[in-house]
Length: 332
Ligand code: AMP
Ligand code: MG
Image 1 (cartoon, rainbow, N blue to C red):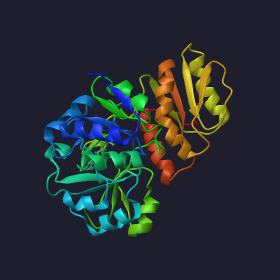
Image 2: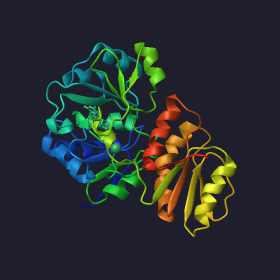
Image 3: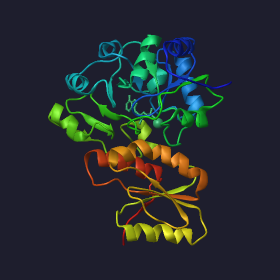
Image 4: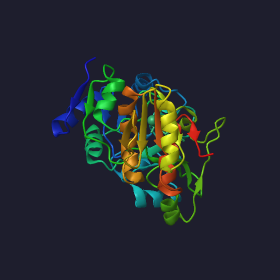
């Protein structure tokens, strides 16, 4: 199959909506990362997502809709959900709700819940509106690879497997949505993201964070390896220039090709240095892009940890630690 990258336009949305209606897959941009969409009412179509990505079948897929009013067609809206919908939808948040109605079971194998999100990106919304269907869409990467934040990343992973990628340029946020279980009386964060615990607490009065338990995760997807580049990767949990330099130099001296993703312009002889950005928000929008760039010419990539702790810093740090496969270097 030939994969075409299309600029957003009415004609593009019509062409892509036809593919979705016929049970095919289309990749589209959102404000978080690119999504790989299929008709969420069609089990055979949703199965194609798992196949194209090499995704484990017990990792549920988020359903995307264009308007708040559509959510009650597919899920039960709790009191907590109502508050979160009003405050944060459309936006980078996914609500896990009790499923009702017609969403196919393949979207969340074995679960009586469904994750629902309304993207803020107008290209995503216009495309979904044109489909007139709920769109099941995980990130449009091969399973375990860094999430795609440009159309070229989708082509890299899924080229030849899908007919169309809608090109919306670079994703603004760059990390996936905050996933919140809104089925109970207290919202429980299952995956950290742009919408932080503090923001949720300010709307609901309370919030809990589900710490990842590898044997029995509340959000099945969190137990899998995620976001790893094609080479070795480690997180440096320090902002001390001397320490960072020492860690990088030790690898350069072994004759290895070394890259460093960091928050300041280091001069590092023998290593490639990439600027993550001036703050955590810029760093989030660049992280996966830089991992995919640096891996092409590296034996090992070092990532400088997010600046500070708490709130959005923790969301970014979560992706950095996963990208590093849990390899964290601290100062002695
Ligand atoms: P991705 O599609 O790659 O952004 O991953 C989707 C994330 O949402 C995974 O971590 C899933 O485990 C989580 N998720 C989706 N639906 C549900 C659900 N019904 N219950 C719990 N977690 C969910
Ligand atoms: Mg993903």
